[in-house]
Length: 353
Image (cartoon, rainbow, N blue to C red; front, top):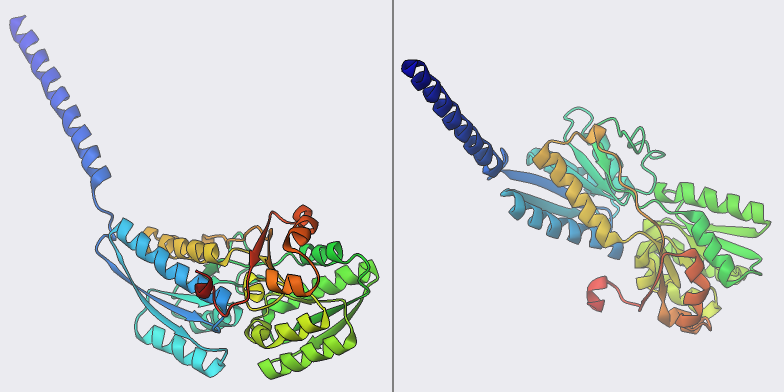
């Protein structure tokens, strides 16, 4: 009997030691560094134009990747370039990224994302886009929920009806609306069609003026002023955005409010910009980049991220020139927005810091 008890006690002791050993192993696994710790990831970022909103995205991608790199013990080696809307330059930038062996490419704005899609059909380098207004219509993804290939990203989709509501909240008797955009910009196609549908249902006349360069947009703006439109709508159109500093005084002097699809337009002199927070867009784009590179997420299964378009940004200087006070216009717009911000005219957001 004594021998049996001794054997049983020995077994209990052995099982206890095994359990302790198991707990130790679980703790060390939890504390162990990730498989990617110490790794260097090469990221190539290409911006479409030198634009206040797009620049905000790039700045926040860089700063957020630096934070995430430190948190995860990895390094994001970033190569950045701007093609300034030149297709040949864009093609060369992407070729350089591929030659440098980047692990992932970032395309800021629709034309860049489309070019990166074409360049990665065979090599399948992951691409994360940002500020693409309609990735499905641009045929970058099969759907927002399941992109289906090597591309995913963040969208600055514009709720056109919401902008139209603001126009008629401020001026219920508006009879003619100007539509100012670049016919070659994919980001303008869907919202302009939506604006026409909205105005047709309302029985309000609209006049279209387009341009593909700053000079052409300036001529188009002058034409709309001569047309005597009651307001002008521009979606998230990069060509018009580039020209905003050249045209805002034309509209202000004619007493015509310019309603647009991004706060950067308002920064550069438009009466109002309505849309997403582009700084946050950059942060979320960086989070997506890290998730793909560090955690091995598949772009094909990573949903495109969209955002609440509820923020209106009003240029207080233009507001005053149009005969409004900011407090007055804020009360008018408040029922149609989650937030109404104020801004002053400047070339970049850095000037306001």
